[in-house]
Image (cartoon, rainbow, N blue to C red):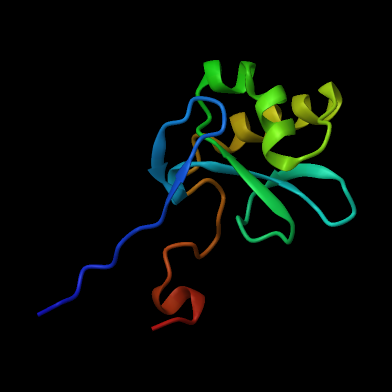
Length: 107
């Protein structure tokens, strides 16, 4: 009998909807204090997740600042929005080898 793996869920900081982690986009505050989009989902630092809906991206600045415990400038937020919109239509949000298995070296 094959054991079914539970998929991790995360919550969008803007709308509060829980979704599978792979459907959300991660924004990270690095230990240096810089805030950026995390395409790999593995960058070091404090992370927060956004679902990529237009309404969520519009109101995400204040909620990201609260979740990341730092101020998020409009320039940084504009860059994050641009990168999320570019990755939104990618099959696995631009994460190479994110499916696991032989391609990533895991069994």
